[in-house]
Image 1: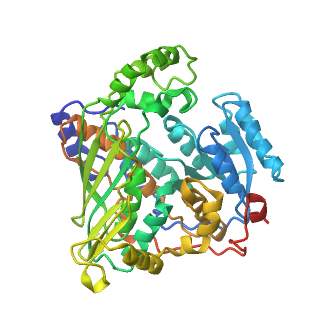
Image 2 (image 1 turned 90 degrees about the vertical axis):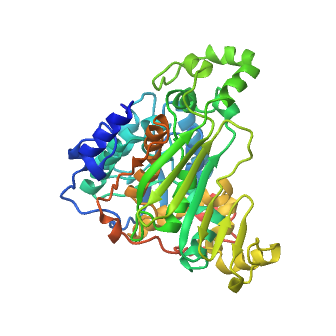
Length: 489
């Protein structure tokens, strides 16, 4: 990636390229405004039928097949993966559930391009390893297709500008599939904020704390050990979007009210992987001898034996133009119980998750300087439950996917495409939330040196409308719908 190795080099680069790009390898040409208007409020022609081509059928892709197939007016028309068996398994699921068989693309690292160019695909849904996201996103938009990509979409400032420029040139949607923005408590918090219950927002905290030690060293988990290889080659926070996305939506960061300005990050040392490998020495020897698959810049053996650049705990602080602060953390190598923290603090109250807690000023009938009790919390939740969860939460929980938030994400995506509406997450947000990977790595490698956060909207954020309290309108009895077959009528 060409990261900077010295403070002097970083400052010199920052002075040269200014606010548009604060990292090396980013040219003025990439950051210079295009002739096209910004796409922050982009509304494209409605799609009568959303025809989805899904690339990647490993961990995340199969769930997308079943969820998308369940949505009225949506058809999965094409599937692609390196392995024929994975494609065939999903084709069988579709035909077994009375859906039309999609086209199949498999067998080489270039087959996915045939899916993208197929005229029966108007939405490309990317669920592949991180390392190939950017190539696929750019190729799909270049061919006039809307794109939805798993998190994180992109890692470098340079690639962010390429994606932004392509989206503006082609006038197509490019959405990060940040499912946590559709969590029940995240959307509840958004509704509280929009109703001014927490007052003026001051500070937010988000995280991805998830013990993935066993998953990283599992043969059939992350194909080709791609996630472990990333940890071996990079530090910083590669997976900020789960915690950061909802906080940015609460604060309208990148939309009308505020924008990120500067970031500073620190990483702990690496301890968790080393101790895990030492404790499972015999198993690691067996794993190191397994077939290579994709190399992703290094061999399986090197990735499994280490060393790893990624510190156990990454902590970044972001300061916004309006003076707010956001803390984002990443830890996948400790036994700490899962949390995304999901904290949003304002002048009149605070919400914190895991478990859900709320403290409000006395005028909102919660004890001052203390958390609301169970009864009060239930009353507040019932009053401010997000309409999307109220209207479609029952079927979302039946359809599954992280408690239903995956289904609501796909439902809203397709609903907006079908009705010619702007998407809930635009291309600028998709890039800015994802690029914390490179920004935090540069800062952490330079002992927490402040790093300027590029404004991928080139100032247009002031004209991009905030995300409203949006829902969907479906002519279907959600309480009676039990399966994909019953939903797609």
